[in-house]
Length: 505
Image (cartoon, rainbow, N blue to C red; front, side, top):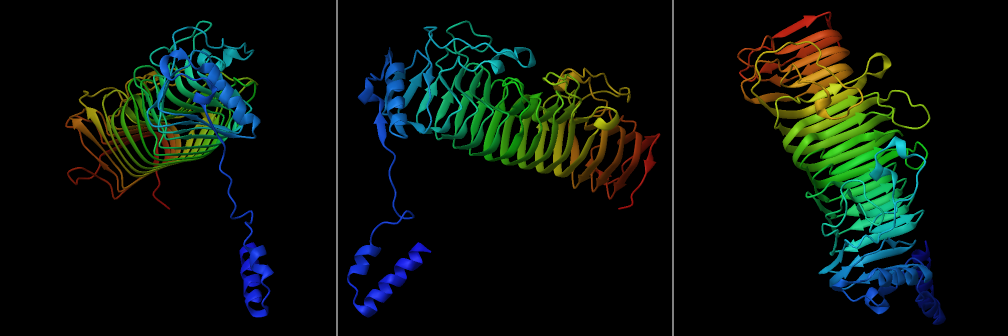
């Protein structure tokens, strides 16, 4: 409206010769006026950038100056900055690492010691303590790490429980509002490259994390309103994981998250994961355009171990290779959360245009719910095509063993199906999907045990030469196979017990 008013004033001036109007209209409006954020170079505050001098004090001084000015950019010109002490972040301050700038971790054992936490028992040690990090902040607003430089723990951060003075993470933030992680690289982060808990309004673009030699990439805990684009995370433990624990003394909500156009890998563990810490509920997650290359647990993992309800989660256009369990959902009964939690739920989950290859015959793609009212419910697979190693002989089709306190794929014994194993699951639909093996397998392609409303529509399954059936349904109320076949075009062999077929819409 102000632009229109200014234009109208100029037109009137031309008609009536009001020469003073153009001068007034030329004054900048709030919509057009911009003020560049002040820049505070760490070199002006005593940083040496020689890779050996301790630059922590200079970094803190620059942060304090930027904060005192009402906000600004703390700039790191090209060079190597040794940081031997924990740097305490402040609100309205962005750290900008120029190309060639590297902040290095230290082995001097002079980082902040971990704070006490009365809620230690509800999560692992690393999740319970935040002060022992290279960069730490609590209850901050509008902070960021940007540029094209690197923060490198340099092999000096701890992957286990640190002693006093040792850090086990690069970035550690609690209860922040407004976090930006753009362009930078985080390397050798110890237990975590980045750990955030109780935050909101987080954005990240072109973030690179390389923790393949130590542990986790990025743990996003009890956090809402997150947008991540073009992330490249290579971890040893979990790469990108969403959790909700009790470290802050409360069950907090999680959700409104979007992750797109990213690459993930996890040597030992999970690539894209919910849990295992799952106290508060999770809702509204959208994952799209993701490539996963390696995960020795789950490619796409989702567990509710501590009473959380996980719902409204959507995966689309994802390619996975070399993963132990391409897709796994599990409800467990660990209940490691304050406030006497019950058993959680998983519902309203969709997978669209997913391709995956597994690397172990034992951990078939699995949906494992709990009994009673804690079944997994409302999961749809549309154009989901998985290839598993196969190679097993015929085995018992009974329910495998399960450790309900363990979230790992191995917590359930070798699945009696080479493809999908569904246990305590309702309203599960497969559309235009398939499962194949790389090596002949004596197990069925699918076993569903205890559930309801199971539908296969244009589903393709490879047939093992010694398999007793292609699809086995056990105590399933209302199953349907429509327009489905084996890879040679023949009809799928179905074996049912205690089950009823229902193909009505």
